[in-house]
Length: 55
Image 1 (cartoon, rainbow, N blue to C red):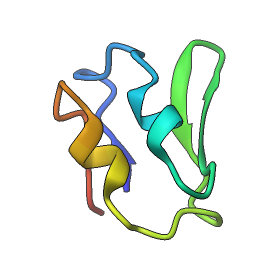
Image 2 (tube, rainbow, N blue to C red):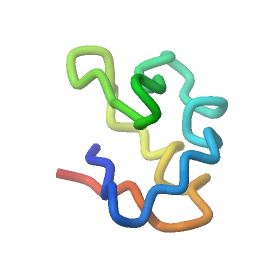
Image 3 (cartoon, rainbow, N blue to C red):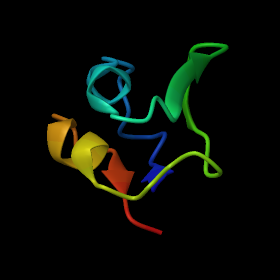
Image 4 (cartoon, one colour):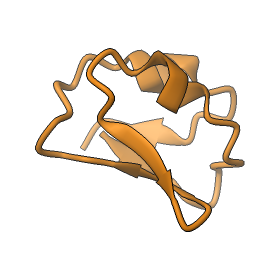
């Protein structure tokens, strides 16, 4: 999964929905830990701005 920073408004919906807690906010930006991400797509489907896509 990949964050499209131009579209991300930092609403944290992806952080809240991630079942493995692979997403966090650091220095005001959303970050996905690729070592923990299982690629389920919950974050992408919960994003109101379509700011997350599959890599």
